[in-house]
Image (tube, rainbow over all chains, first blue to last red; front, side):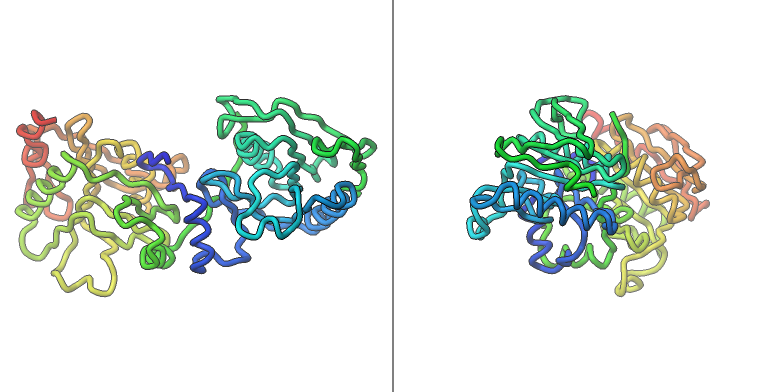
Length: 192
Length: 199
């Protein structure tokens, strides 16, 4: 743990969980832990909430049995990070994650309007560092889905990692999840 | 590198006290609350501790009766800041601060080695914003005392305030505190020659 004098103190995931258990942070407070910092999320707009629902529905239909599609649920990303991405897909069923949050979703989706840059550069770098293979941003500003793959080191990135491949898909296109090459999800299903 | 705003959770002094009471933060970890953020403070190693003691001694002698000289006690700077400056001088007696920490020291001193950048930056800005009139940094890196006075707004400063006047004092000099224009403190009493050779 870096403890550079004059830096904002970093929280561990364990401490973060304690903040919740002891009621210092209330359940509905919109924060997530990214690299030791409690990042305050923007208030969710109605389109944001709707698109999160549409994305979860589309992914549940595409992935089917044997996969668990979660909405705004915590990920045990690393020692200092516990983000709550808008939608994520993990293998198995709900009961497989009773004792600990999943750490390695096969697919992670953020729905972005005002949070676009944060989702691309900050969270994207944290997800790349954790080696998550498939990260999508449903970009409400430009009405496109951005697909990020192939994590690699990059000293200029926020946490030293970024995704090498970025594909931008417009509403006419379809996206195929890495974990499920047989499935196709229409971009238009996510962006009405 | 792309820049974008990141909002981190801010803490009030009240919440900060709760964190402490609940034992969430390790007891011996040097942190302090500045402008709603828990900041990593300078670990209290040597020669830091010795210089703090020398500073307390010099200021206690110079200020005399009617003043309290504290070392590393919290001050109630504002609703979202509770720093623990290395030394503060406040008016009054031992029992004047039972209800809350003092808020407006007449003089505030930080002893800086690894914290130099921080003490000059974010902390100086927080102290200036609170209107603290007299702020000294005992700079162990360059072996001098920096005296900061005349707080004023400055949009480019971390918290929107900075000190307009900065004076540098080397070990041969004396400093006159703003609150006690009739006394003087020899820099050499704090940055003693004996210590310098130990470093």
